[in-house]
Length: 316
Image 1 (cartoon, rainbow, N blue to C red):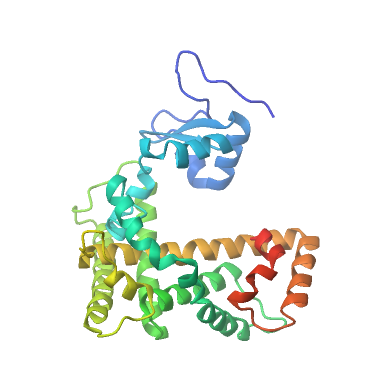
Image 2: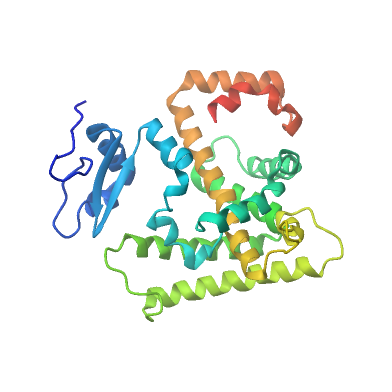
């Protein structure tokens, strides 16, 4: 593998050449993962390329990644892709910045203490068992769809205490539509403002409006309770900043939407890629199954058994 060096005259990291107007947008759209991987391999730990008028810097070296995300994090803002989703996610943890982000993270973090997360283990196991009960020898399943459906059910139950399958499907379906529309918008080089009444913008506004009404209903229901529920939204409703103030309904909406997205999509992707990689590495799969057979002996796992599954943790 040859590593190119940046031009002395440009002062920019090296990268693949693109077209005059679109830059590398065609390669980016056609095969995103391959494009990023090949760019990192060919041009080194810090490369650059252009998507339309925007220049993107790709840091793939571990030291550089730590510098951007940890050491010098305060000097960077979130990329335009993350900020572009504000119409759906609002000003939640994924899209917010600086002091506001830090204040919100500090407020929300107690809801994710180890003991809190482990209290949802039984729900996770029960819903996983329900999925597995629908599988049988010889049945063909689309593994990424199955895992996304599972993690969505878990997120909606633990976040909103939402159990009705019809309500779950409507909420997740509307959110999926909103993100599909946002992804299409993000891939466009030139974007019309969201207030322009194009068919795509009107569909997006309708989807976001429906999501807002649904989450606002969850918040109103939570505020009307006399006792604190076990779901995450109930805990956020009573969370207080150091000055005694609590989140507004709008901020609760933004954080709830953000936590739902972060709480199921990342997990579904982790499971899907893990199963793919296991299919490519049968020796690892055999070792993993052996650990399950030895520790679990066919029983549904519990949070107390996690420390006895080190190989499983290593695979993940």
